[in-house]
Image (cartoon, rainbow, N blue to C red; front, side):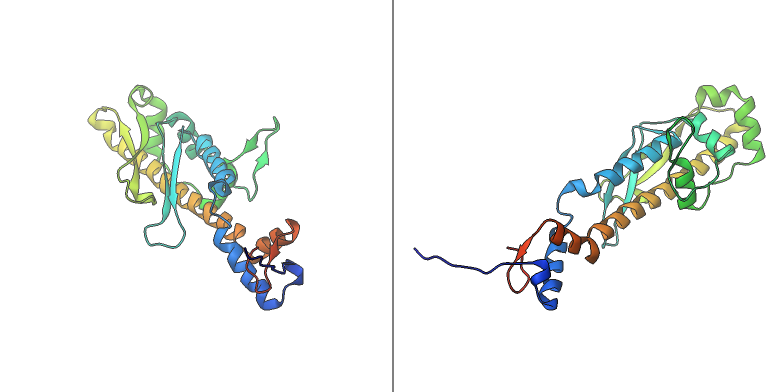
Length: 224
């Protein structure tokens, strides 16, 4: 039997070169557990639900390959709620604020981040408010068309309904506006996830983790 003794150091005791090695080693495992993205995904789901995308399921891959991206499906889209937002959007906000009732407001934050909402024409507005065809027939969901990747092009808005020829064009234009919003929200979700990943793997956070958790390292900076 042989006994090996190894001297270990806390982060602040390491040389500058060893500190760089320690940070790189910690970066390799910083996001190896799935829970690093849980808060961001829950926030993204709340944003989608507040727009009217019911029971959203988010998929993503990232953040360094050509096919990376984020997308979501939704079993049902609350068209009345969503179109109400498109017709009368709230003022954009840099932060997630609370209403008078105390409920957090996610839509203004999302609008700010995606740079505005797609417009709806006056003809569409007239049809929405005057047509029984819209209220009775316009059924929307978000479906996945490809399972190989996760970017925004792997899903799309699907509208179901049978409309008189006189309003079919308006239904198509409205579906296209919702599709544009869906793509913008996919881009937003991906940026949110990428920002969180970059934060969790930043030098500053890894340095704080090493110090606050009293991690130990060998003299060359490898975790002990």
